[in-house]
Image 1 (spheres, rainbow, N blue to C red):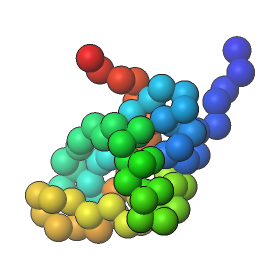
Image 2 (image 1 turned 90 degrees about the vertical axis):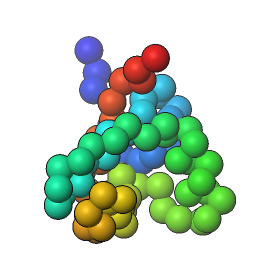
Image 3 (image 1 turned 30 degrees about the horizontal axis):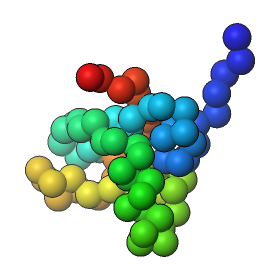
Amino acid sequence: MARLKLDSVNECARRGYNLRITCSGCGRAIEANAVLLTQELGRRGESMALEKLEERAKCRECGHRGATVMPCEVNF
């Protein structure tokens, strides 16, 4: 079985995955819809690379900037 290289928000959306974003400060985790996030980042003209998203992500709970972003299966 081949491994998928999911290194951008767009690629995750195309493959049917959401994103689990975990704050590096407090550990709070959310599940973000990759399709909606792709649309928003595209509208803003920002990079869709997961690496860049990890640097820019800001926690709504503690205000810490920096997170771990990884693909996760869609939960209905």
